[in-house]
Length: 179
Image 1 (tube, rainbow, N blue to C red):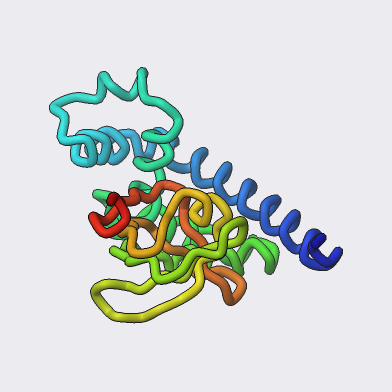
Image 2 (image 1 turned 30 degrees about the horizontal axis):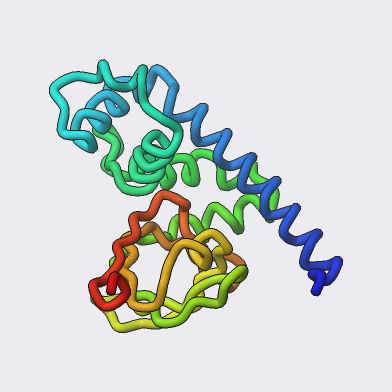
């Protein structure tokens, strides 16, 4: 069954907006103004004494670090994450669709979730182990990789009334599914 045309257009628009925001944040995080922050964050995240491993990092590990850095690491001179600083600096200059996505991203949070149900090819139903809240995660990859009762540690992003993952999560197979 094909997606309705309006949903396809919305998905394309979301991807354009997401790509724009990611590019903007990548540019900002590499600014000289945040060089010390980036180095400190790198050593903290990877528990290293220097930044020499930055040159040889694979794409998945870099995405994992970047998600954490943008959303969670508090900048030395500002005491807020880069995402919030970008919002403060640019909120009056951004188009409504970008501003909407940015404010949704600012609501993102890390959590530990148990998979309640898998809808293969579409998404998974998750339960936040800490709060007990349940929701549907709109993520095709997760629906192919995860099984019921698996545990997922991930950054969850509420967006446009739905939930998405940052793509840098860690799944853990439970013993009940390993048999």
